[in-house]
Length: 169
Image (cartoon, rainbow, N blue to C red; front, side, top):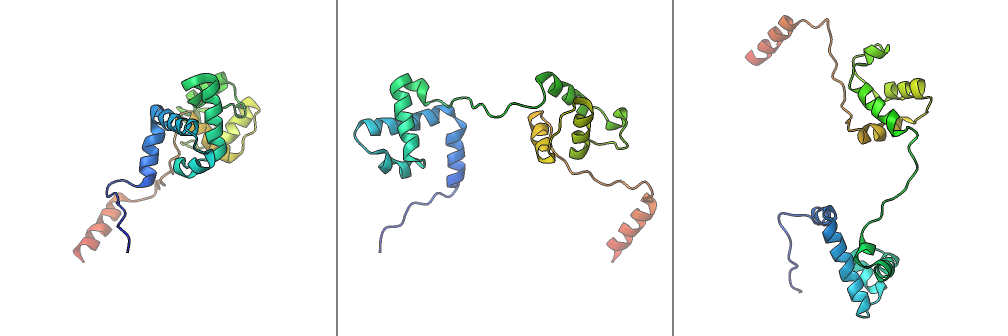
């Protein structure tokens, strides 16, 4: 029978990984240590499990460090697909979403993804899929909240009576 492995009680491995990823200096330090081990003669294939990344990524770190020094170990900005709305249009949309949709001719008090999608199509002649509307809203600083139904025909006195009758049981 072997020895027991030390178990952590207060942190999971995912939480520890999130802490490492949170600070850019930690990332650079880990990458620098991997490059250091490569320079000492360790193979990138033997390091891939230890650093939880591919051997190719470790080789890339080593090459970038050799060319650029510490700056080469920093994350580079990623390009991605350009937004369909310009920065000015996004700022305009953000200010519109802070107001009530009724001001723009819609028959509702809250913005929904299909409503935002229709507004963007109407005002900017740009077509978005509904899934991307949620991404756009998140980038603009909004969050999705499920609406709560309010029924104007609800009688509060009758509701209170039913609740008190239930409590008596």
